[in-house]
Amino acid sequence: MNRAKEGDSKAFADLSKNISDISHSYFLSKHRQGRIINIDDVDDLTNNVYIAFAEQFDNIGILENWLRRVLFLTFIRWYKQNKSKTFVELNDSIFAKQEQDLESINIDAATALNFLSKLSDEKQEIVKLRFWGGLKFSEIAERMKKTEVAVKKMFYRTLNELKEKLD
Image 1 (cartoon, rainbow, N blue to C red):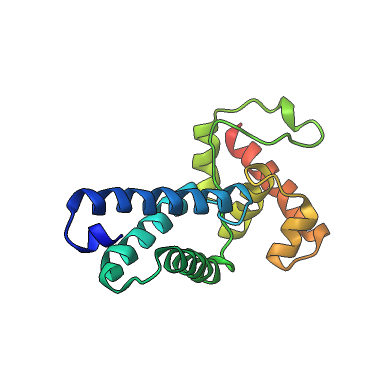
Image 2 (spheres, helix red, strand yellow):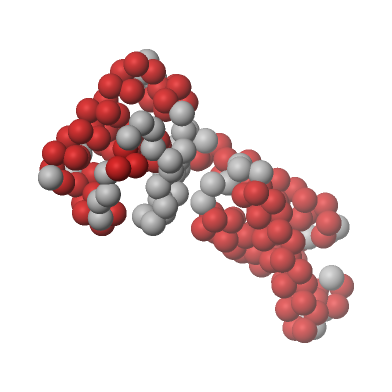
């Protein structure tokens, strides 16, 4: 740290790499714990810590204390901003197991996604949370502040609507 503050660019580069590696590792562990859903957020948060390091470099006293504090505060700030948002990573090639005889419906994923995008936001959310999010009806109902019965009805009606459009 002292050599970097004295102007040694190699020491600064090494220190910068260590800060980035530690930050990435910290946020990756949050991703594995399920606290960060989107892997792109891990990279963004890592970059935010590095930027803070570059901006505050001259004022950092004890590096370990500074880094712990910045990692924690960066994550908390991000978490508070994003906790009310529902994130579902979509993977077009993988569908969660479907109930009843829905496996017999063999459709082109791109066509289905095209039709899905034309549905109301509420219907899209239910389908995405069920298939891609892998959530139970009760969990979807809780997130959407609806009854489980209402969610099930809307889900199966939406599937029938999609099936009719595909036929």
